Image: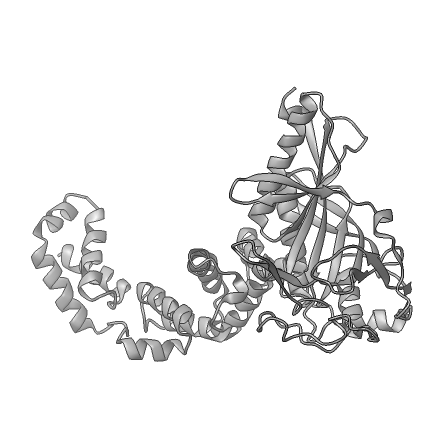
Length: 479
C-alpha cells in the first residue's frame, strides 16, 4: 500500500505562557531573561514549609481564553498534583488540573482548502511551568535555572480532529492569533511562550478505530511541527507496511537530521498519580465574574475582517493577511486613523513591512516603529513630499532607528524635487544623453519612456517627482 492509503490523525496540546506580571503561586516576576535564578523565591524553589497562593489573574486569563474559544466555563474547579520526575521543578511534581479543568468542550474554526472546519477542544486548564536545564557542552554536568519555574501556563488540548499538516498549521496560527487578540499571552515562540506537544497516529483510510499514537514534546516552531508530523507519519506507515507494531512512546524531534528519536514510553493519566492539591482551595467561579470577563473581550479577527472589507473596501485577501496578527491589525488601524488611506497602509504592511520582517527573521510584535509613524509616512507620499522610492528608504530607517518620518527626510535631504524648472533641467539633460531612446520612443517602443524616467530618477537619487517627470518627458518627446 502507498502513503495515499493512510490518513494521519493528529491532536495537539498547546502550552501558552500567560502574560501576568507575577508567577502562578508567588509574587516573583515572569519577565523573560534575567540572570539565572534571580526571578525565584522559597515558594518556586519548593523550600520546606512554603505554601502556594493562586494568582487570581491566571484564572481570569484562562477563562478569557476559554470564552474566546467557545468553551464551557466550569463553575467549580480545582488544582491537582501531577507526580512526575522533573529535574528542573524542585517539588518533583507539577501543580496542574486533572478532572475538573476551568474550561471544556470548545472549538476553534479554521479555513481548509475547500471549507471551514471546527477543531474541537477537550479542555483548557492552568498549570505551572518548569525551570530550565543548561547542559555543559562537554558533558560534565548540568545547571538548573529556576527563573521560569512557576510561570503560569494554560494548556489547550484538542480532540484528534486534525488530518493534515496544512490543518495543523492553520489551527496553530489561528490559536496564536486568538491569544494575541485577547492579550493573555505574547505568544513569542522563540522564547517558549507558545509551544506544542504533538500526538500523531496513522490508520487506513475508512477505518474508524484510532491507531497507536506517539507524542513529540515542546515544539516551538510551525515549520518544525509540520516537518516532524510528516516524518513521523511516514515512519509509522513504513513500520505497519512491514508488519510491525507502533509503540506508544514520547519522541524527540531533531531539526538537523529531520528525524524523530525515542525518549521514553508514553505515560497515561494513571502514571501521573494525580490527586487534589491539598495546599490550595477549590476554585469557585461566579456568573458575575464570567460576565465581567466577557466584557473585556476585544473585537475578534473574523469581525475585523468583515469590517475591513465593508468599511475600508479592502479585498478579502488583504483583510486576511492583516487580521492574521493582532500586531498587523493594530498597526493598520492606527496608521489609517492618521492618514485616512487604508489601501496605502495595507499595501505597505503586505509588501515592504512583511518582506523586511522575513529578511530579519522577526515576528510582527517586533516591529519597532509606531502606527502613527507609518501613517505619517503615507501622508508624506500622498502630499508629494517624497517619492515611493524614497519612502522605502524611510521605512528602512524606521526599522533601524525609529523616529518621525519628516525628521528622517530632513536629516537625509530626501525631500522630493517638485520644482518645474529643476525637473525640466533634468529631463533635458537625460534626453541629450540618450538620443537613441528618443528614436525608439518615436518608433513606438513605449519602454523607452520608462527607461528615460528611470535614468532621471537615478540622476536625482530618487528625489524627483515621478508624475512630473512622466508628464514633462511626454511633452518633450511629443513635440
